[in-house]
Image 1 (spheres, rainbow, N blue to C red):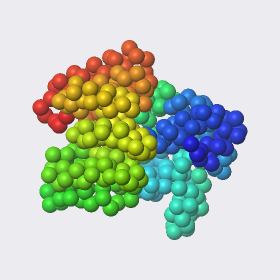
Image 2 (image 1 turned 135 degrees about the horizontal axis):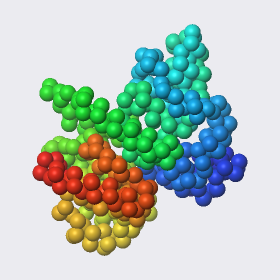
Image 3 (image 1 turned 90 degrees about the vertical axis):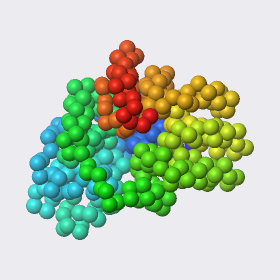
Image 4 (image 1 turned 135 degrees about the vertical axis):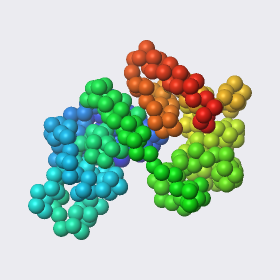
Length: 365
């Protein structure tokens, strides 16, 4: 597997092993996020060592921990809107005259950040923080919820109390300020257009939102079109369709994807396996027979119950996937972290199960 320049630089410096770099790059490809997040999740390096070297490699000064964890300026959101901050990977910190101090994550868009500052006649002064602390800053400044994956890592770096305080605040905020439902907008039509024609990030976001509309006839037709593409002979097209099907999270696609494990293309078979793991929060390997046996046992159960089983999976990445999907569909948390000790995880999983038993019949599975 080809490594990124940053990963290679870390290996050459002796910060991480090549094996850790390969595993982190694969994890990043599967689950998103930055290389630093993947390395910290894998415990391949400690935060201080990793960010110190990343700062030198990227050429951005490292932010002292006291600065990275300081409460944000109340004017921060007036200096930069949340959309720009997320797009650029920048968190505003201070504005003094024409000098704008910001905190950036390692994979920020440096050129776009400088261009943004130039249009406002500002001199920008960046300092580096790891991605998980950057996401905590976005929450503190803009109220953007922190996904369970980052909360789990934040709990390790900053303490469980801090992580739970963050998620509690974000959940309360969502309850106080729900997004009004627009009655004059064809939401499904708009999402389908974005899923077909948008940029990669927009397509992924649209597919995830379409998960809530899988019974809509237009979404069913879209699903069938993706399945036809996945079954065709051109590997690149089939793989792209399988990635989209995984993002759509429609349980009805499982049997067809299982058949693609037998594809003559190793690339397609690998993509089919990855899609099945994402859809089911389980891993039955590369044999279609084992997956069909799994489908016979689990196919009639709601996908929520697949995720609840996934919370107890032996593989941390699958536990992380299951908890992330449950949080996304419910905005609940229950103190579950994928890397907690087994006893603590099981206690939190039982709280999830009790929640589902109280919700059955009131939300899609």
